[in-house]
Length: 388
Image (tube, rainbow, N blue to C red; front, side):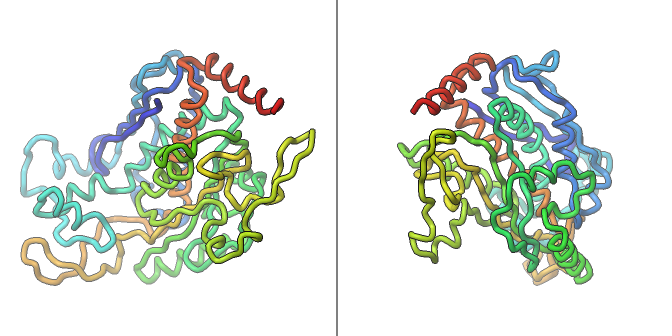
C-alpha cells in the first residue's frame, strides 16, 4: 500500500517527506522533481519567502543509481530561511527573549483553534506546522507519484479558472491547452486564456493595494486514466471520496468539485448524465464528461477533473480584528510575511495530491513489488478492456 506523510515546520531547518510502497525499478528524474518544486513557487502575488527559498529535492533514501529500490523514500527540502530563525526557534531551550510570539490569532488561520487544542499560550508553533510551506514536501513526493503514473500513460496537470471576480468562461478546457502550460517559463496565474489571466492579475493588484488577499479556483485534470480505479464497494474506497479528501486537505482549500458537480445540483438529469455510445475502434465513448471521469466511485475512462475552491490567504497586510492571547483585549491580528494570491501554487500542490491518490489506487489494483511486475499486470488489464 502506498503511504506518505510529511514532517517539518515553516521556519524550521528543513521539511521531510516520506513515501512508502513505491515499487522497485522506477526511474527517478531529479530535474523533474526540482521543476515541480519550482512550479509550486511561481505565480503572480507570491510573497517575500519565495525570494529566499530555492527548493530542491535532496533524496535521502529509497533511491540508488537513479532508481527506486522498494524501500521507503525520504526527501529533504532545506529551508534557507532557517538561518533567520535559528535563535527564535531552536530545538534546544535557547533564549526565551528571542522567541517570536504570535500574540493575536489571525481570523481564518489555525492559530486560535490550534492553540486551544494543544494548550499553547500563543500561536507560534501552530503557525509553523499549519503553514502552506508544508505543501512543498507534498509536491516533492507527488512528483515521484507522477513519474510512476507516467509509466502507465497517465498525466496530471492543473490550470486556474478563477481569481477573485475574474473567471474563465470556458468551463471545459481541452487537455492540449492545459498541457501547453507546463512549458511556460514565466507562470503568472496559470490560466490558459490570456485575456482572463490579465483580469486575474488586476484582481491581485487590487488586493495588494488595499492590503487584502484574494482566492480563486483551480482545476486538476488527470489525463488517460483507465476505467476501474477505485470502487463502490466501501464508502472509504470510492475514488471521488479519496480525491475530495486529498484536495481539501491542502491549506486554504474549503471546497472540492468533481466534474460539473455544482452546476449539476441545479440541473435536470437529462442535461447532466453523460450518454454512452460504442464503436469498434474506440470502445465505449461519451459525448460529454459532466461526471468528471468518475461514476459510482470508479474511474470511467474519461479525464478526471477535480476543482479546488481556495479561500483568500488569512494573513492580511491590513489585519482584521482579533484578541490578544495574554490580555484578552481587542487588538489587530498578528501580521506575518505572506502572499497575496497562491491559487496557481495551490493547483500544483493539488496535482501532487491527485497523483498520490491515483498512484495508490493503481497499485491497489495492479499490485507489484517491481515496475516490471506492475506494468505486466497493468498491460494485462488493458488488454482485457480491449477484448471486453
